[in-house]
Amino acid sequence: MLNPKISVLAPTYNEAENIGPLITAILKETPYETEVIVIDDNSPDETWRVAQEMAKKDPRIQVERRLKDRGLTKSIRRGIELSKGDIIVWLDCDFSMPPAVIPVLIKEITENENDIAVGSRFVKGGKQKSTDNTDEESALAIFFSTFGCTVMRLLLFPSFHDYTSGFIAIKREVLERIPLRGDYGEYFIDLIVRAKLLKYAIVEIPYTCEKRMAGESKTAPTTALLLKRIRQYSVQILKMELVRLRFFFTKK
Ligand SMILES: Nc1nc2c(ncn2[C@@H]2O[C@H](COP(=O)(O)OP(=O)(O)OP(=O)(O)O)[C@@H](O)[C@H]2O)c(=O)[nH]1
Ligand SMILES: [Mg+2]
Image (cartoon, rainbow, N blue to C red; front, side, top):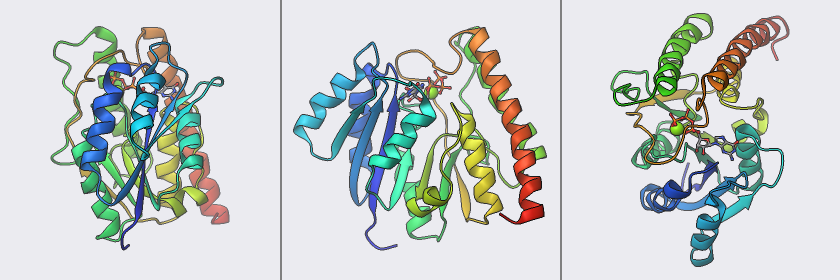
């Protein structure tokens, strides 16, 4: 792929302290012609305002302030709709996923004939964030994502490791064939399983997941929400088994 256009999507909810430095880092690190699209769910901390101020001075930045129907998957979907890139990248906006890895993911598509490159905590060289100095909910969330990904590997495709990554570079044409489905992080399991079934070339690139730079977790700020997420992920695994079965019988 020669000279692709790149769209980097930044879904945010209460990331006011992170979004400015993150946009700057993304624009610094990403090769080729790049647009950054911030999709903010009308954050009470006014993340959208910080991004809008930057967008006034830099035409590469676009801000979508969503006023209703909050949701991570819906926001990424909206970002895809607005984007113009040949390759679309997205990542968490809390510096847990280093922007310096973005060019490595893109290179896997432009030079190594992959369709999808995923930032992975669970391949050799990758690292899940440490549970040191973290509260109980975050430690539990870290435990469940590590344990959950191992279970998914065993039940789904053992060749893939980080089913809840959320850090990805992907060709637009793949997303045209596989629209994102789901509410929160489980959309990623669906995307990977369907892409595997359709035999897209997927590579995992190791990275070290850091603790969020500032602000609060949206995955597991309370034990009740963490349990809800675990339930969502469990239902998703069962759904994917059904999708797999249907695929093998109908080949679509
Ligand atoms: N637009 C939008 N973004 C969201 C929503 N919920 C979470 N996000 C963003 O999705 C990304 C992942 O959320 P995090 O809170 O970092 O989840 P996490 O990585 O499991 O939790 P941490 O351990 O705190 O990093 C971040 O960029 C959030 O701002 C939402 O409802 N709407
Ligand atoms: Mg995070």
